[in-house]
Length: 417
Image 1 (cartoon, rainbow, N blue to C red):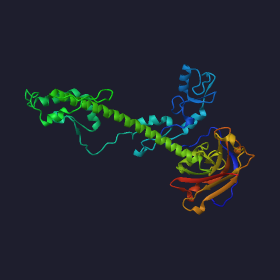
Image 2: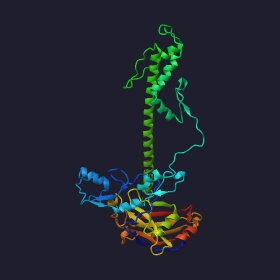
Image 3: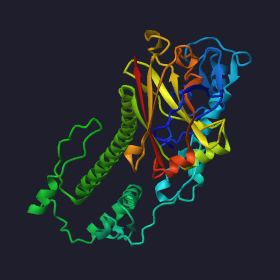
Image 4: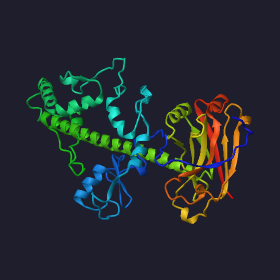
């Protein structure tokens, strides 16, 4: 790769039906374009309606059997004439790859989103962690009155307390029967310990109001008060566990949504300056060499918050498989009607030499208003791109220090003029 070599940019076309080599890192949550509006999950056997909406085949079939109209805009639909297979989206989803949740334990398998749940159930690394240290068992709370059960954790003991209430009451009764209590204890003077026991509160009613404490004059009343207090405390503990579990789920979902929002903000406010880090570079090149129809796309980034949106495509050159091609593509946005067309500006590539910055490869090209690549997009991504069909020799890029830790860095700058 020669830093000072001049290359001429040309318009290139990405064949229809080509999908990107995505490596999904986040949780198994689909992008909106891959999400079924009915089941809110990944599209399975996707179909598209004449009104332009995508659904799982089974979801829309079941829906139309009950209602007969589109779930989105209420337009009347017929399964025979208004529903068509969406093979393009199906291929896109099948190209997605997600890492196994047990990758930290050693699983290197990457599967499609639709196969992830099946893989998890069969994954050899989906095993509970086994501690080599013998944990101390927790004795039952009624150990002092005769219960000899013990448990590995507090949760097991809580289940035991809940299920064996009658047995524990028998233990309490037997323990108290062994105490020599004077037959006239109800008439005797009450010592300090019994006075403290009498101050125990009654269990609150269902409305949460505290009941008026009743004086405890005998052993049966004391046991009843203790029993009711244990039951109420256990119920409150379970309610708190449910609240904590729900809050944990909400925080996890909020964290994922916040991360996605931050990524979207960075792409929208990068002002046309985007740094594309291509990891697993060697494996990706090998995959594209085996199948020249496979291409790698960057995320879409903006020249301004409400400006033009571009992405970058990298693929093996169709003219010479020793080279890789580098093109930019315009993408559709909600503000396209407010922009001036065709796009007019300067596009710069800088392939970073991570060992010697002076060897960084820099190339600049100007847009051409006569090319389809710079006209207003009519689809999600413009089919025609603009760039270099033979940008650099793959082996030179690897050998001359442009790839470090299997990562290639390309800096793109797009400025309107």
